[in-house]
Length: 411
Image 1 (tube, one colour):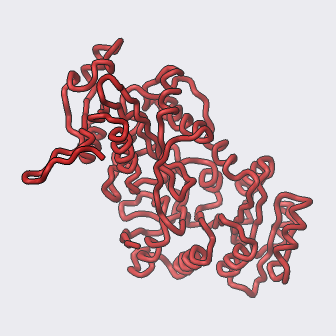
Image 2 (tube, one colour):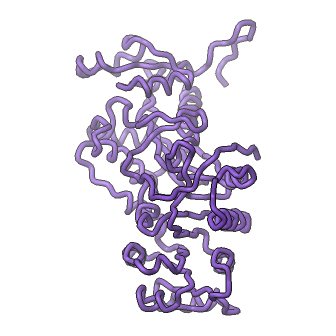
Image 3 (cartoon, one colour):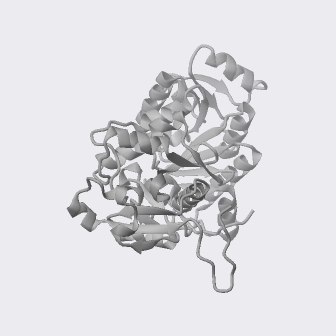
């Protein structure tokens, strides 16, 4: 596995959350252009209601989450209490791990078990038959971080949320790094680029060991940022995962709510022009998504084919803040080009009102063209003033051969 090195500071403050909106990766690692999908011309649905929280609650329903809370953070447990109530109402079971047995019992009203029980797994299972949230107390003689890791591994819980007063990681420019895979974490630890104190460095090494041992994901955030970390697209801390891989596939029926939410989000924030319902339906049924680790929806796009012109429009290209720098936008573009080629289209086009977005497409092999170089069907009943402001871009589905290189027909 190739290791990509990036250097981060550990955040001493709570950093940005989903309110900053979505952005699109430009395919060059670490570079982004703001609101790429949202500046694509003519998208969204006016007046749509949507809920990021409902999307994530659906993902958590029927699962068990583990939350590790150092004793110092149990003094102000209101954010944790609120999250536990929402997860309980959602049908999500939660194991809360801390060293403060009394605080777990008195403040959170949890049934508390000792982490030293020889059959802890069975004891937690029995407790869940009566209550949806269970506390596990770590003995004061044990080091908290490795004890938490061992408890989560024993229970076989796939997701651990670690509460830390310093929050997640910061990149050198001060922006929050919201997504780090195992290879990047190793590179950070080897290089010393994390700039961490001894306590935080030890925590990162525990996260590394947890990922290696089989825990699928570890989130690190502040207690105040816990709701955003669990229930928003942008998060508030850093998500650590074992691997980073992106699968782009057709949107299925179960993906439509999330994809529709992303489009509606852009409309509600004023970044997307609205589409009527029948066009939204066309976008969804023609759409595809980029999924990180097979389940995290990182971005969407749609290929709207115009058969008589042997062309297709790339529409609704939109990527999430959490996956900045992953090349998600580029993955989506490459998928669209391959799909268009398989459908017999000679070229793909896109329209935007942003020079920066146009730059993204140009780096992805598109070129600027005049409006009359894309299908006339695009401009039917189109506002002339808006047409004058739109930048049109086009890319052939088969690249022109280099000098001396034989031209190859589409596969």
